[in-house]
Length: 91
Image 1 (cartoon, one colour):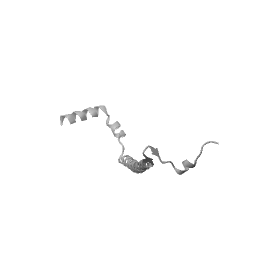
Image 2 (cartoon, helix red, strand yellow):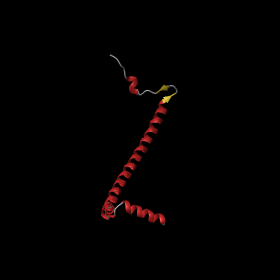
Image 3 (cartoon, rainbow, N blue to C red):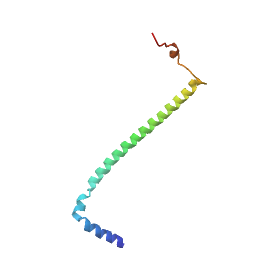
Image 4 (cartoon, rainbow, N blue to C red):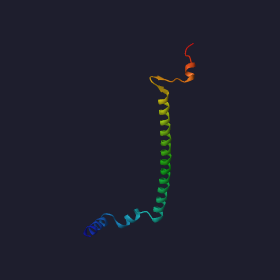
């Protein structure tokens, strides 16, 4: 209890009452700030959900690519696409 009184006395000596009252936002200002923060939170949650979905899609594609690569490799030889066997370089 003595600490609370001492802290209050020190704060009242440091910060004039008029100045402290001017710096505090009104209830309407606080409500506006809260509403702005809620909008930001909802936007960030949507971005996070979108990012999570894209990450999951990427993981699925990576797994499919890895499986395709593994299936395409037979021993030391790599299966060559049909167009590659029909393609010639040179003049």
